[in-house]
Length: 422
Image 1 (cartoon, rainbow, N blue to C red):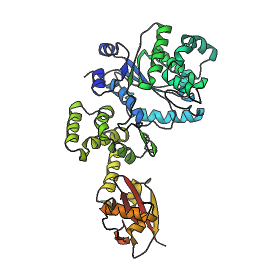
Image 2 (cartoon, rainbow, N blue to C red; image 1 turned 90 degrees about the horizontal axis):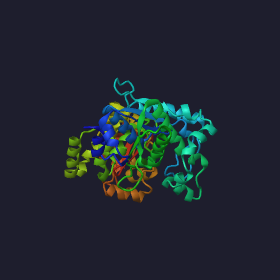
Image 3 (cartoon, one colour; image 1 turned 120 degrees about the horizontal axis):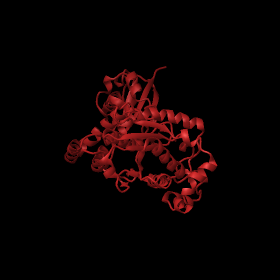
């Protein structure tokens, strides 16, 4: 299947300029997507353009991943309600280096036919002279057109407004497209649908300055079926860097996908073929409680980002928390698997602790009455075993290695309680 056809059945084409499909069918093209280094790591929202670049490459097209070491110093105002805090040059440079390694997991920079390129726009943007830029680039943009952009209008109508710094961002991104067109014959830019205005501005600049026709294609801007921003959890962003989001937490993010989103995400974020996704969709309809689509989604995306070792770690942790084999693990294993799970301590006593008291004092529940209610409703598990009697005592000999209780409240919340011996 050609790349346009694949993007189409996966639901990844939100909008495009006229003629994109014909150009892709006719000849290999050079295509680019930009990634501004506003943080030390990319997050799951960036997977959509990254994987799209990889799909273009597999189809024989040459991808460019542009890391915005220059534009990252300015900040993109697109659909941001407030201006970003400006980062220092040192911060941006450090972020760029981290992002380089993450992009290399997905793109083949050694391909003999269509090698990927990684470029940093700081190379040319930081060398620009203000007067030259205003004469050679700025004169091709009207303020009327720039303030008509929806993202700019929203900011201008806000109390904070928009600074000249961020107002100039579309000109810089347009200049990126021009440079890549001149250097590498890049003729297609992709991005999220919020980038449509920036992409078409770059196309207009190339047409005016070089007289050439280039193209743009934008991907859907993701929101969950529940109406929340994709990639955000109560703990914050879901990062691709394992030091910021552990493989277990990354895996759990995908496992917890809403049933209404699971098949769509299989199309967006995995390379599974159409027949396999159809099988999973049918299985999810038959046995939704088994969550077959979410399980396959979690495995596939975790494998893409963290490799097989990441999948093994995540599934071992999941089995430990939600299975019945916690007692078979050592304390060291449990602490390694769950370094960020909320934890508390309790002084050793040979007689043990009433379950209700321990849950409340360890912070698992807000009160003894809540603990009683959850136990009666079957919502508390200790070391993989459901507690059903609110009068039960938890004894040291039933703890893992006599030292640790793994407590699960409901479907997702887990806690570790360590026994402290004086």
